[in-house]
Amino acid sequence: MGPRKPKVKKNEAPPVDKLIKPAIGVAIAIVAFQFIRGLGGGIKRVNVADEAELREVFFGEGGTGKSYAVLCQNEESTAPISSVFQDAFNDGSVKAAEFRLMDCDYILPSSEKTVADRFS
Image (cartoon, rainbow, N blue to C red):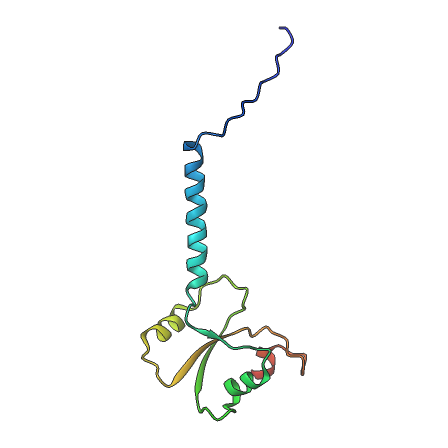
C-alpha cells in the first residue's frame, strides 16, 4: 500500500433529491408546531400586568357587567388548550361568559404572589 491520494473536493452542490425528504420533514414539523400554537386562536389573553383588567375579570369592576370563563395557561406554553374550553368557545353556545386565557403563574408586584395564589 502506497500513500493515499487526498480526495479532491468537487465544487458542486449536493444532489437535490437527497435534500427533498429532510426538507419535507422540516416543513411538516413547522406546520404542526404552528397548528398546535394556533389552536388557541381567537381566545384573548388577560393582560396580567394590567391591574384594572385583572379587577374586571375577578371582581367585575369596570361597569361592563361581563362574566368570564378563564383558563390558566402560560404564554410560553406549547401545550394545546383544553378541548372542552376550546369547543365551548368555538360553538358559541355559552353566551353568558367571555372566554379568556391567563398566565396564572405571573407574580403580581403588589403582593409578590402568583395570580393563582392571590385569587384562589
